[in-house]
Length: 312
View 1 (cartoon, rainbow, N blue to C red):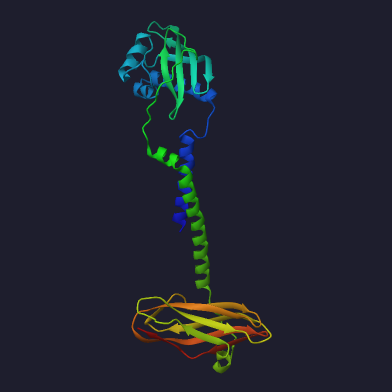
View 2: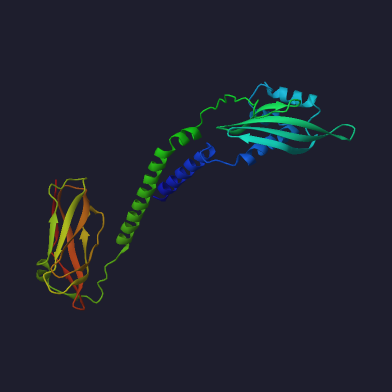
């Protein structure tokens, strides 16, 4: 039961995470745009041109090797970038342009400053670089919008169906909580015991007047059957802690042995039910139905006649 609840919680968490990842939860472009540029330049300096190429969509670099070659032609080799400073950035809705000043070391032990201009575009993947220029400054006016092909992933499927899945997961969570509470109540009920200590015996004829056993009709081998136990309080005082237990024949498999009626008010009728599964045909008995209750400050106990069940 707990696994079911935890599973529902995990599903809801995944949905929220997928919505966040899919861009439904917005982030600040003023932070994402320069971060994208800095991450790209870090990949260049680390020699991870595959990562840099994955952050880029455009016509400047047609392959991974072209990134390495073009940056090398500008004197930017892996490990030579000492500092990347954002000189300026402009953002308008889903496009942005950024100018950086890249400080690069050379073989003579000196450094040089190389300006690099970036154009970026917001997409389902987040902000991606669409153009890199070493000569011509880029502006929002000359920035081109690029068609970005994004392969559908399992997260996308979840995000697209998030409302329906969220409702389903929420229903499963509520159902799990209900069943868990019901299961705990059942375990608590089954763990209860009947205390017969100090009880005064009374004749079965006195008890039989207000306790009735009503077995279900057409009891069949292998199928669950019921025995309803009705208790009527004919007196002017309540029955307190009223309970009944019994011994079941080996051919009967009971769901529970003890029945607890708790307090029965004057004039009130209360029903509890034994649920049994017969294993053999013929006659089966519920032996020694024992009634225990408190009445008028005293505890009483009495044993009734067996209850016979005809099993087909």
